[in-house]
Image (cartoon, rainbow, N blue to C red; front, side):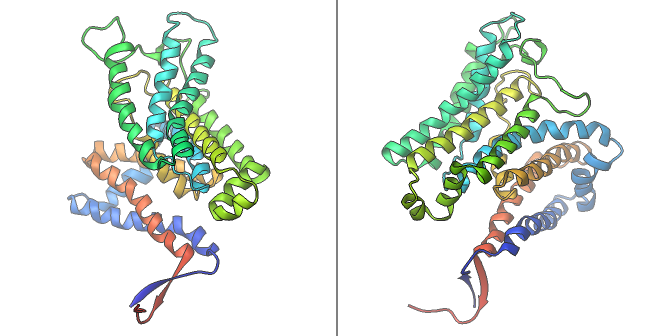
Length: 361
């Protein structure tokens, strides 16, 4: 009988090796899934991982990598701080949507003004929208002890099915169109546009914000008392209380910070790549960022690498769907395997496998 035995201290080897092994297992099982769908697994993996970076048309795909990686990194950095403290914000997708709605509404209120103040105002409102939406589960947890996982997750449905839908067909709909849901195109309005900062790279203000967030989070975790409190709370909650950590304040900070970053991601997306508020604006970035956060080991620098890897699967997945006919659901399942295998392999960080007879009570 094989059983799990807790290690005296977490294994540094498995902590570093788990993401690599998880990626390897994802490739193997993903290849088997593609073969079961009647596709050449090697061609599928080449289309997903090789073509976007080194293929014949890589010059086109490379510009899309930062477009996809920017919001993933931005959201994942915020989530990672909370996860390290044992605060589980699973509703970043809702905060992403509300941030986009708040920022778009603030800008469109001044349409067609060409003031340079409009875009900064939209950025501030986007962050505020995400922050306030995250405060709902945060305050319910602090005041009433309500589980933040359930509340933040349910609020995604509210944001997507109620707020986003009503905005696209009602209060933010472009009055100059007839019968078509969706707001004005913000990327074509100079005052609200979020264009490429460096031509051909895909880098816009959202990518710049993601890099700033990574640096801020790294400094916070390694050089500031708040970062020490976050790490201590995640490692030893009881010790954190004795060290003077106030759990409620930490919940408010981590939920608010992650909500604000998710809101910013939504704002930069709606003013750039997406261009407008529409019924299908929700992209799933808020959920995919959870995979990115764990694949990056909840480390801001690791999240950059994980975000770029996940961006490759997005761009390569679209390439495989177009050229090989792979269904979109298969690409989503392939991405989800990363988190599944990472969580499975990560067990070995705190436990070791032992062979022997089971212990009976």
